[in-house]
Image (cartoon, rainbow, N blue to C red; front, side, top):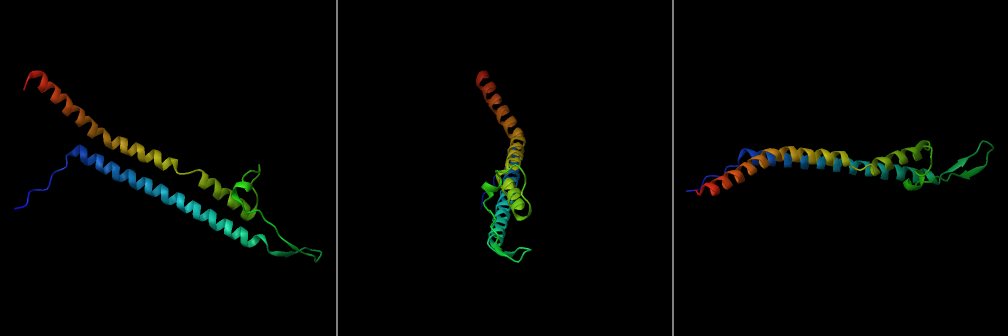
Amino acid sequence: MSSPAPRISGPAKSLLVAAAAALAIVGYGLAGHLQHQADLRAHVAACEKEANRPVTKPDGQDVTLRLMCDPRELDKGVDLPAGIQGQIVLAQREVDGGWGEEGLIAILVLLVGAIPWGWYFLLERIREMRQAALGR
């Protein structure tokens, strides 16, 4: 015969659920961060495609349009550039912003989920010390 499956206590369940929720939150934050990086790469590629195209001035003279597409260099200015360069700066700021909010929320969820487990763990240690003091 097979032995019955081990039962997980209530506090351990809350800790496991909190850990799973924290991992889901971190995964969501990571997915958002990766999406911001992909957006930045797409904007830079569009800028580079547009960077060297020939343009005809109103006087009929052909010139080559030169655009700076480096996100770090573009973000050094005080004002937000117009057009694709402005989109690059905004995308770079999103990437630089990281995903600290999701990480903080995940830590808080994990800590709140660990409260019941910690409480029952401490109660068990107190019970063991009481029984040792009584000589049982």
